[in-house]
Length: 279
Image 1 (cartoon, rainbow, N blue to C red):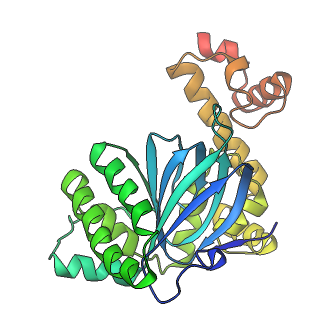
Image 2 (image 1 turned 180 degrees about the vertical axis):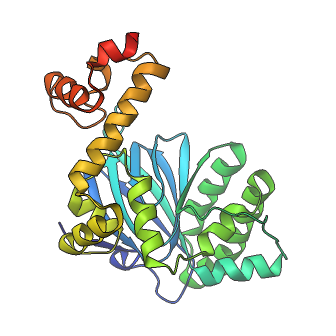
């Protein structure tokens, strides 16, 4: 699968570090490999979006929007059930823009900032008006766009920090220099997501063979065995704590048939899912 590099492949104005792209499509994509060269807002307008990053994942509809850190991710875009249309306004900005903003407004983080790679927010009237204004701005000349978008970037960041605090800003600026720590974080964060080895390798920025080698070094077992164990443990939690039926969850945790799930569960726990649930 080809990796899409954004915003490079959108042919935007290269002279500006803050750019907007009005993205529209009538074609769905499933888990496209994306390399984000800059940070980005995805202001979803129509359809559904799902993203997987190294340490976080979200599935949103058009009542929400995403803030995404630069790096590797997997992205799915589904069309609106009503209009059969996908529409998202992408607002790109660099780490330099972010650091300049933090310095300008003298923002201070809390002591323990968890560096997630993506955040989800819900639209309100202010954000809706903000997004409408972006569509107006991109109709103007490049020189005017460049000046206005700096102000618009500060506007959206000031508003979000007023609502949510500043920790998400600092999380975007943090890099995990320890490759082993980043690898483990990627695996742990995606333990219940039904990603292929190739997709997990991409999120880890590794070849599949390197990923397998690193996995066995850190977890002392094969990826298939480890992920099966984690998903079976999660199925036990769902059966006991959320009273879900085996027929409701076998696909959710990665089994193609109910009988295969029941057999795997019995091999691990010594009882069937129903016996476990009633014990």
